[in-house]
Amino acid sequence: MKKAVFPGSFDPLTLGHTDIIDRALPLFDEIILAIGTNSSKKYMFTLEDRLHFLKETYKNEPKVKVETYKGLTVDFCKSQDAGFILRGLRNGQDLEFEKAIGQTNYKMSGIESVFLISSSGKAHISSTVVRDVMHHGGNYEFMVPDVVRKK
Ligand code: ADP
Image (cartoon, rainbow, N blue to C red; front, side):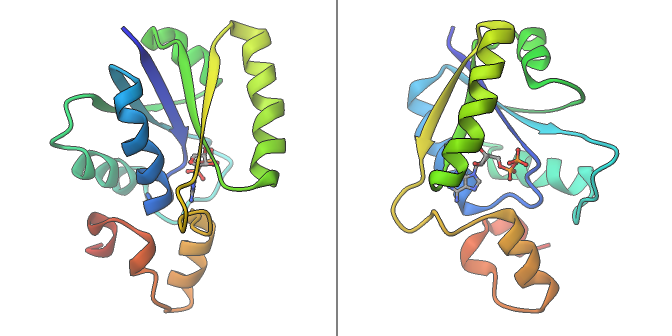
């Protein structure tokens, strides 16, 4: 069984994330959307809200599971018996960052990272931009799924 973990903060879930998840579904038997919790990091949305965004968006997709985890992503993958880490690449900056993490994770665990490049027109979307636009009262609706729009 091909199982992948898609780790992230999802603060909030965006159409950039769903683009990667939806396109990865045919590649895996199961995708675990995993919210990494880091007590020293400040989030805009509560863990409960972020879980709700993921669960509600994928409630009709049997291949998707939603979990939270603390600690190293590779340790979480092992606990779930997942052989792959899924990540999205928006630009060269993401590539450089993800390359170092992917190589380190592989050295530590033998777990492969699988990268999908953003679909055309989705690379500008990030949770940081969405939070900034929300904070200043701008229109963010075209960057997020329904469940985040309703919040
Ligand atoms: P993290 O804090 O771990 O980067 P995020 O929730 O910001 O968590 O992102 C999770 C994953 O989703 C990362 O691999 C990130 O590159 C990817 N991602 C986010 N936005 C996009 C996008 N617009 N296109 C492709 N991948 C994206």
